[in-house]
Image (spheres, protein in one colour):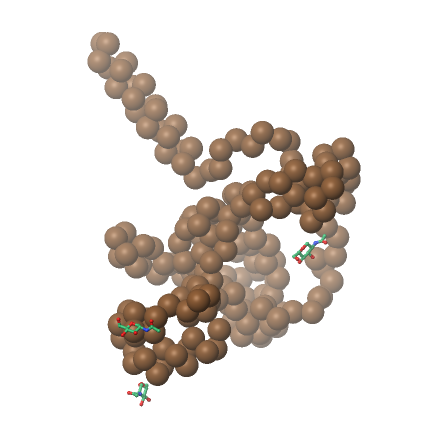
Length: 193
Ligand SMILES: *[C@@H]1O[C@H](CO)[C@@H](O)[C@H](O)[C@H]1NC(C)=O
Ligand SMILES: *[C@@H]1O[C@H](CO)[C@@H](O)[C@H](O)[C@H]1NC(C)=O
Ligand SMILES: *[C@@H]1O[C@H](CO)[C@@H](O)[C@H](O)[C@H]1NC(C)=O
């Protein structure tokens, strides 16, 4: 009986643990409105948090997503290239347009399995924490998406920029072997970033 309740609490612990691992530790403030101004601010996760008493409703709302804006990434055939967020799981909701989106599992899990789909207005996709993902406007008109990430500081690594555009550059011999290309091609790629 004792063993049984021990097992039960152990599986409860495991359960709790499984649910807990996707999240940042609890924050110790009610909210952090990011600001560039260090006056009256506290440095948290790479940004200054506004003095909470100076926050207004405008810090928590945004008006005008129904108005077309200048676009680069989401123009027809535009894309957010393969990238990852080391500390956050992302959810992407398509509000307008048609997107092709997907993510790839890690080398040891899958391995490198691609999950992808054409998403229409009202569809959403989850990109699990740390996995390489992408999204592209494959429709015939503009696209609008809303994305949320479950971390105060999810991070952003664009794969091609990191590999071919690092500062200083990675020795081209290393990349030539990794990508099975010759050094000239690698140097051409490095010159583009
Ligand atoms: C804060 O700084 C970033 C990077 O320099 C800039 O893109 C952003 O517009 C600034 N935000 C405000 C509110 O000044
Ligand atoms: C790159 O690595 C190769 C092979 O190890 C080496 O011969 C070459 O000198 C390195 N190039 C630079 C710029 O460090
Ligand atoms: C490198 O590879 C490219 C693409 O396959 C090829 O066109 C080029 O001739 C190669 N250059 C050398 C120096 O082998």
